[in-house]
Length: 522
View 1: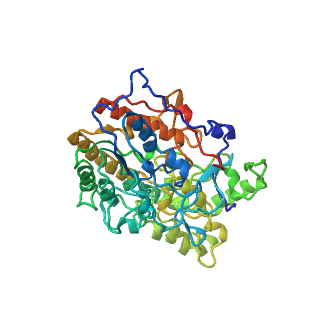
View 2 (view 1 turned 90 degrees about the vertical axis):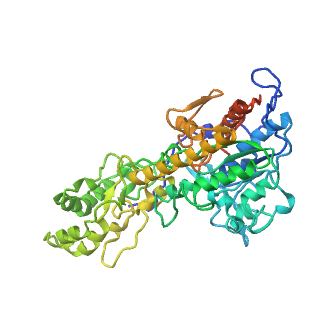
View 3 (view 1 turned 120 degrees about the vertical axis):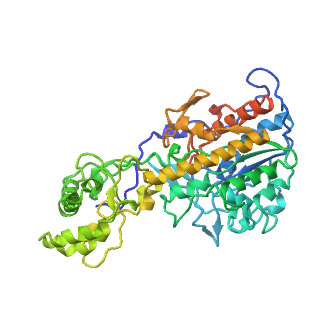
């Protein structure tokens, strides 16, 4: 069985490379032919507050060209045509992304990826943005988008010590992001926050040992509601107007919709010779079929028989030699049948099962195959068929994650966890809309927009924007953050909301002027 189960996407490189990097020309007139106006808004001091979406994060990293293409920078260029002032961005040092420390890439912040024609690939090099180096003296910066920030982080003193992105621009160790933004006395602001308050939990497969959903209720810095209202109160304290966006549901982004619940093709069960040129292409070989049949006969078949005795045979299915197969996983919501499996194996009379009984019971007590309703994050696919630690005497072939050894629940979002995310997101969005209404702020229903993008697509400027990974125009290669064209779409939607609320007559950018994805070299 192969150890490398990376997912494969055969997409024409010409599609990814289309749209050149020419500068976008800003038209001096609005789309209705009338002069551009600010309406009742004052854009002379615009400050953008948020997370990586505000910063321009893309392809798994923050880098100069991505920052230039952020939706906030795009709308600031429109503001400049009607009296808007300078929009300062805390640029990274290069187009690699992430931070370096002692001459090596800081592992928690990798470099960006590009599409090599087969799969996302990290660009070569080490970031010249040094971890811990401050650029605060060159500020203040109008783009206060902090990658990784949750709503509760923006009002937490000392956050600069745990966020390298905020740490490089903060002017004092205990300064909050809200204080940093408010100190600039903005006349207009944007606030798009809350995504990370659910995203971390989703990316961790609902494992609370790795991340938790921010509760709606709780004091400032603990609960979403009080923290969000504190942000709005602080940003509007001097009479500033602004625009806010709500939180899209995670099921609308390709990080959770690309990998199917049956991602393991039959040809992947045995190490074959690559039949393709460039991208890996394999065929189902006799060795693949023999391996699958052995797994069915020696492991999955007997386990399924035992579970059937207890009315739980549907947890496990035999693997197909002709169609793609599901992932074997642990579902912590299932009743634990460890003792029953161990006892049945010991009583089977089968020497192999009897010898493996102490291993099979605890290993398969809460195991099942993935099924409709589960969501598998992109990164989980790389763990399939990696080696699990096995006790002495257990054959190595029984230690293949996702095939003969159940993957941890943290690699899969199960329906109950998806429901937790839905409930939390809807609660956040009620708070966001109420705050916008109370202050008379422009409001962008980002959740509805991304739902449309995910469900059939949204046509804008002649482009069909979908959430299809790589080919859908809207998202970058990390499956979470927008592509350049996707950021341009977001900028248009924020401008539409601003025009509606404040009577301004700003023109949004034409999506045709923006790339689909960034190339290897910038």
